Amino acid sequence: MRFLSTRDANRTAGLAAAVAQGLAPDGGLYVPEFLPRIDAAALASARDLPQLAERLIAPFAAGDVAADWLAAITADAFDFPVPVVEVDGAGGPLSVLELFHGPTAAFKDFGARFLAATLERVPRADPRRVTILVATSGDTGGAVAAAFHRRPWVDVVVLYPRGLVSPRQEKQLACWGGNVRTLSVAGTFDDCQRMVKDAFVDPELARALQLSSANSINVGRLLPQMVYYAKASLELARADGRAPNFIIPTGNLGNALACIWAREAGLPIGEIVLASNANLTVPDYLRDGAWSPRPSVATLASAMDVGNPSNMERLRWLFPDLATLRGKVSAHAVDDDAIRATIRRDHRELGQTWCPHTATAAHVYRRLDAARRRERWVVVATAHPAKFNDVVEPLIGEVVPVPSALAALLELPSVQVEVPPRLEVLRSILMGKE
Ligand SMILES: *Cc1c(COP(=O)(O)O)cnc(C)c1O
Image (cartoon, rainbow, N blue to C red; front, side, top):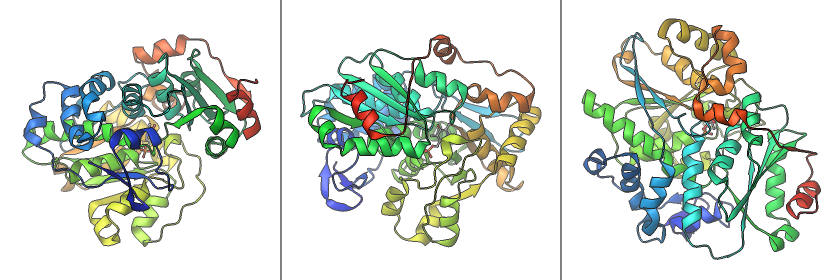
């Protein structure tokens, strides 16, 4: 299996190289040259999640060095559960796919842990220590820091916008120490991202360090996200005799793209519905056919505040024809008022507590009519509500119990360095001059 750049089909790499590079050299995103036909029976008979992951990802690693390490990689990465929980009283068969049982209580743990496990094992061309730079709007930085913490071959530098992440997200970004440094940037997420991009093309840094990125355009974050769609769809299709539909909270489109890839690979997945917040780039595109990226707007579902979703390039590469794309996915916008109302109502009526991101998907479910609710639907829960207790608790009037992994992190002291949004400052920190 080769991975091609979305911008030039002649630029190819095997899985290990595509993961190590992140972005293709021409600035395109790596995509698999084709979606292999998955042997659903072999997946369904897997003894556990790591083995299911190994069987699902194996065709993508075929012929590459990564294939030799895949069993070890998936055993390392998929070490927490992915429950599919039935919800009663919704007016039809409804399940929640809980993606928040990893170390930092959001689905970003799947991609980050797979990436770390892969980079750790697959031989590198450059023997020097690796420095991972990651700009985060909240969840990615914590997941990446957790996944790479204490691995002896790597340093991690996390940049986040001060004051623009939830208090518990901030704790999770700053609690690590050791090989993880956390920079609190006086600026926006866009500033953080720009500093990281500038660092990658800075000649002095390129000479001195082996920089690598862990951001969501890395194909090593997408493949592991197919795994939970495989697990959930096989389980539910076996129980119901028909393919379940998924509603996915969407920002940069990484999570949804993994679901689309899983369905194209032959897994029993019905409709795929994207739930957006007030950032309307994707719903507007599907409606009008004009691709118009724009600055992001701040919402309660802040991890979905993306105005220029980079994975759209992969989606349009796969389905260049708009009519075809419209047949593959639909997208619905959910504003902050609807997020608040859904968190309140579903807590009261269904006994479910959603994070603000998951609430966008739950709201889209609420808009389905009675006929459509007779089908099996799955709301994809992307983060634990306790991570966003500052939003959720006042709405439901209760304290949200904190999962033990998250509680342990919240106990640790915070260490972060406050920096202005300037490359020179990042450069001196990276060069060890500050
Ligand atoms: C990152 C994130 C999203 C958006 O996922 P994409 O892959 O960017 O579409 C949704 N919810 C939570 C909690 C997230 O952290």
